[in-house]
Image 1 (cartoon, rainbow, N blue to C red):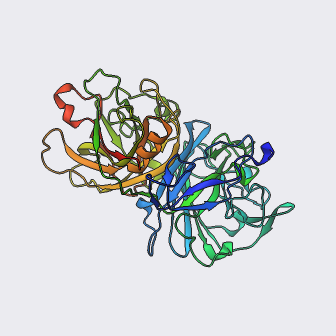
Image 2 (image 1 turned 30 degrees about the vertical axis):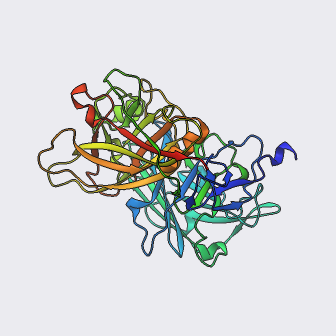
Length: 474
């Protein structure tokens, strides 16, 4: 087998994972029930491309419960993007929220020039092949003030490359800022929501749970009328995007971890003292000390490069109004797993955070659906920022977090997430558990405030905690 076809088979982990028996697959977790799809990779592609586990909904797709991923950087000339993904029986929804200082569209567009202005390209491949084929699709949509048939186009793959075609899909743009095609003042950003019927892709209905496609996203940028276009940002980052083999993985359904093993041991992990290096954590973006700054120089030049690794508390926040991105925040935390004896089976694992407040004035806060993902790489508590933090490798859990009201008794209100799947994966690979928490919220005032590992020793009970139970391998 040549290097061109390295990794001919990749394991797609289905909804039920049983670590006590079966095949050790791509995620390092033994699985009895699996779905296989020939996801061919090429040399030069990422060995483990990031995954988005899209949740399935009945009826309307709730924006705030879609899976979230991200890529890019915040700067005067670089764009950052949140990706939201969900689906129902009839259609796939992919929404992109883009932080962009200057917004420009083409006043005389043609299909060939759409990507020379502010635009997005969504790439899908329904078979997981190595090369562009009839199962490959390219959807392009350019920024505008409303839906515009002139500013969207779709291509289908063929033996000779991409061919323009016509299928039904929706691309709904939105923007926030000073004005389109006007650099007299800064803008804040824009959005594009793709709704693609499965029937347009030649599929009668939603794929079965556990099915994997290939997916990539490219954000095109232009900041002046004269141009030229600024360099693209893409998910997966720094990956060749010419062929589906290098794209990320779109998995239909969210994995659920189960095992029949009986617990025989347990471990509780949290930082023992304020200055201990164990369980490093950090807020990035709109930390509680950096909530929603309005200074233009700060938000475009400093906001994405600040470190809050020693803060005693942290914020998790997002919303649908892209104008408020200086209020958005993610949380990173790493738990060592070397206290678990070798050769065990992870039975369950729970992440507990203690909440003590919300953003907004009294009565304004709304519930959040906060998601846990596995971070795609290591990071340093003293240097991590919004711009250099690793992206998500894979979303693994979600929990509703309500606002807190009235007086709070310390250590705060406990909030929990089932992270058994993530712990089993990290343990099987001999790695620490590297997590990142974010939300796909829609409402204003969605920020939730929690106690960090750096809180004083008077509040040790409030520090982030991982509770792991294990059993014996058969």
